[in-house]
Image 1 (cartoon, rainbow, N blue to C red):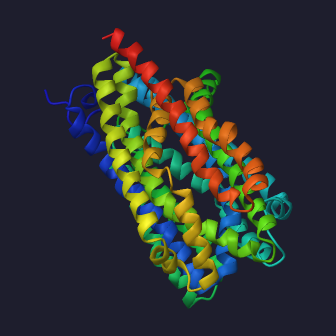
Image 2 (cartoon, rainbow, N blue to C red):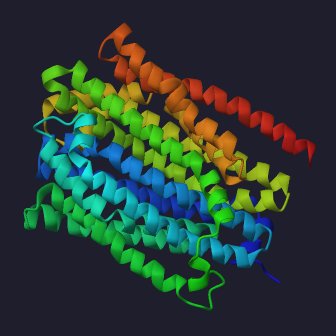
Image 3 (cartoon, one colour):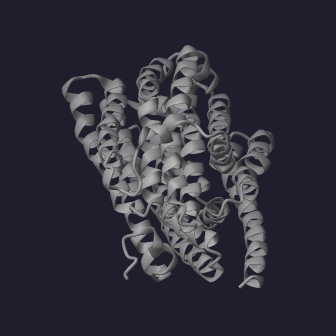
Length: 452
């Protein structure tokens, strides 16, 4: 009997074909999502102005923090789901799905209320000036109001991927992107809603596709579906979900802290042109994000395959999917490196016509992407440990770059080399994190090979 199209294929079908089948839709979805972020920035940059681009960069830490709480549930639960499917425990798989919905509702609402009450102080702490605060406030108010929708949408997409339905997850993401790209110019240019229109387009698009996800999971004939009794929180399952989800949670939280330090450092170091420097960082971040998202798509494709085969103790297949994912990820980040080094001016000009902003973006892009060819390997290594439920190692690798290396660099290097030290901190931290990841991964692989 053929296992294709069922969770059993994760343990039987050829790894190369599986990775392409699972990562392909995720990559398409992630690329579409990152392209949306770029198109969104282009609309804001040309339709609202350079200060709005800086405000978008200032809002990024809070959005990262929201994503951190979303990943605490989504990534942890999707990893558990893959392992349970590998063990053929379908009852637990449906309980995991129900708990994802309940946890996202509770955490999403709590995050929204707290952040809305503290919004202005948070944005000022993130580096907002009197000129950029109104833009950042208008954008984040709407994003926060729609935060529960975002959490549920992302959480259910993670469930679709881990359930062996990557095409469904891809359709949800592409649908969100298409709605957003259509609504953005209407809201920003036609209706004149400015940066508020961009935020509203995002929330409305996610709400539409969340309803589509609900419709799919409400079908009782699906092996994975909603049922009221399975939405009651199970304390043990919640602890396991959060334990595994702590790795991406800490990674996103650390990323929030990093962006705050960078924005504060740029505002302080560049003085009167601090808002422009922050806007430049926002542009560089958007460009880097394209390639990071593609690697994340590869990781999402690897995750259910690695989780299933680890649960089934098929270590040869586990190692094979890791090697192929590392190879593809390295190719992606190498392409990003070459584009960032050779065409930084042309890339920056897509976002703005402001010459000063373009000049800062060119310098920043070349520095930030110096070690970029090896960043893909570091990301895959961290995700690999997370995919097989080794939460402690995944957390350490997720945090090593940000907390152990990048934060000290951000605090020390500007005192040694001046304001450019903010930019140089990023490749220095990348290099150190790559070495640590390689050491830990190769040590773990030797242990697996002994069990084969």
